[in-house]
Amino acid sequence: MGCSSCFPTSDFIKIKEIRSNFFHKYIIRNVETKEEYAYKMININTDSKKKKKILNDAQILKNINHPNIILLKSVYYSKDKRFLNIITEYADDGNLQQKFDEQKEKKAYFEEETLLNWFMQICLALKYIHNKSILHRNIKPSNIFLMKKGSDNIAKLGDFGIAKNLGPLNYTRTRIETHQYSAPEMLEEKDYNFKVDIWSLGATFYQLIILDYPFEGKTNEEKQENIKKGNKKEIPKECKIDQEFIDIINQMLSLRPDERPTAEDILKKAIIKNRIQGYLKGNKFDLKNSKSIIEKYENENKDSNEEIRINVFEEIDDDILDLEKIKENIEKKNNKAIYDYHKQMILMSTELTRRSNSLPIQE
Image 1: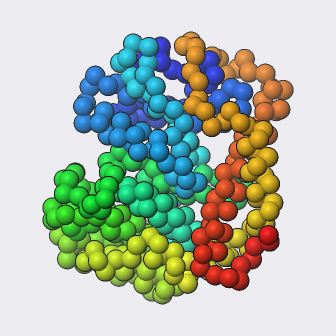
Image 2: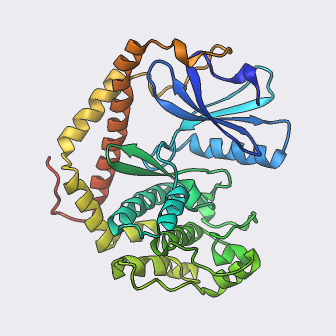
């Protein structure tokens, strides 16, 4: 059941355990602010490959700060140095694989607006990491997470365990274990670059559009052969998705990497610009108001950017919490959600401002 001496129990309580073959993962809650986080304990004395992946994830995330990427809060060792502990943002609305499974079971296609909202946000995340020369290499539905803000979902890219900083070369020869969302050039063990992320994102959203994995095959080998040949399933007629969106996804799944768009190219597309504009309009975005909310929150929480402090190592019973204190502090959690939301809105409006002079933004 893990290491009782390294659980952050003075400032946090354990809400839920998520079982894994590789590490112990919990959802934890800050006793004072009621904010929830994902907490992993990794035994660093076993499974050197998994240890390297987790350390790489933390190293990459340490230098990333983007509203559409899971935020790293803290990394530390247990007292006995046997466990590496990592605390990140918690995606309270699951991931796209879970949403896909739900829709497939209901046999109900996603609404185009929902898909475009998720898609544009992950494109913003990709543009950010690619501009920092970071290649994700593991984009798939289960690694795109969702966080609630009222009725709106904020999509966040996570799991940077096999990500790589390409540096000035902007390509790599490094061979990694591939999966069914890997680009053809990776399966063929050729040199590859940022366009493998574009392929994987295209495959992910093609799957969400048709409610089925794009490439047929009874085995992984058969699927990989169809990936290499570009043999994907047809989009059903009853699936009502704008042709411009489908064209973007198809271009992302081009066999030739140089024919695929960059994340920045995608954000220039009319349908994406219109979705960003519609998103801002629908949420009555006001630039001055958002800046004011962000400034106020940051001034009131000047210490919130520091690492989470872990200082005591014994269990806390959830039942002993002061209900009045919970009521008082729940507003802090809501304010943090609002802060994150407005940071994302400003990011989208900035992207749109670079593309158009007529915006639904109030200065």
